[in-house]
Length: 388
Image (tube, rainbow, N blue to C red; front, side):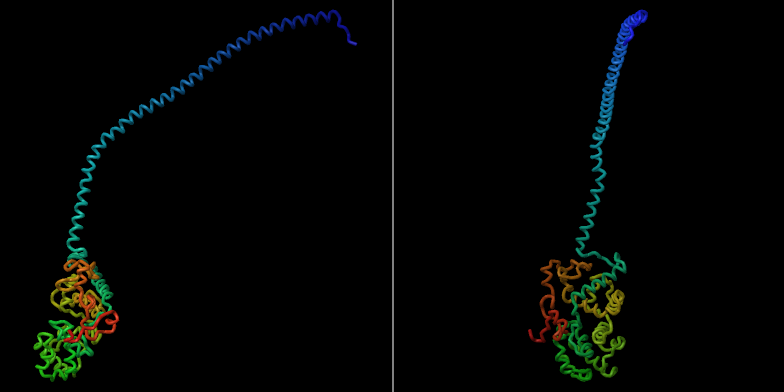
């Protein structure tokens, strides 16, 4: 059972309760007083807080404004800078043509040079080889021409009919101042009647003259062939010698005839400097010499000795078929790009084709008995004398 408080204790409790009640209002009052102070502080802080964001916003607004102002200022400054080049640009453009004027003049000079080269001749890469072409370049060009001609005339051969060295030396002497075709049409009757040097040496001159009449200069040629026949019989036992120094001792035999015989009857290299050869090597600027012996030496120095005989055939064949003396068929020439004289003849291909001779022009060759290689290549034998 609970014990009832005594009087004193109840009094004390009452006093404590009264004190507590009094203290509670005081605390509330204190709290109420403190609350306004806190609210005030909070308001002040809020005010301060509100002001700070405003300032920040202002600062933010001010910053872009400053940046914008700076950009505008920069733009304004840049604008004049851009405008300044724009203003200066027209003078630059005006002055540009002045600076480019020399460049415009240079192209004008180049076409003149090109035009001059074209006027000189489309293929005149070397107009004066003696002055502008080195020795090495000349050798290379000359050998290339020979290689090109070897492809054009793979069947090139001596265009005189012969069965032995004696017939060849006689036919070569007779070919002076006439064509090989005319000689080939004449010699069959001569060799049929006088087959050996002994027979010809003992012949009647008048009979020989009659046979040789179609060759022209028949009296002089009769003396030459009969004289060399006597020399062969008396000095060489009726045999044609195979040495240059011996051949040139025979009447009517010079270096040209000797090299024809040596190269084609004995297989010994030699350069045949006939009229075609002389004309073409000067036209090609291989040499400027006019003397046959000097031409032989100059051209021989450009080629190995083993090429000399075939070289002679290639050049002579080209001179007879395409590179004629008066009207070269430049438009049909296989070595036009290598020829300094291109343009001296007909350059139109169709017109040039009409100038081609012998098998190149679809006509018979010069030999009545040509080699089989020539026939295999499409060449046609020449008709005999009097056949039309």
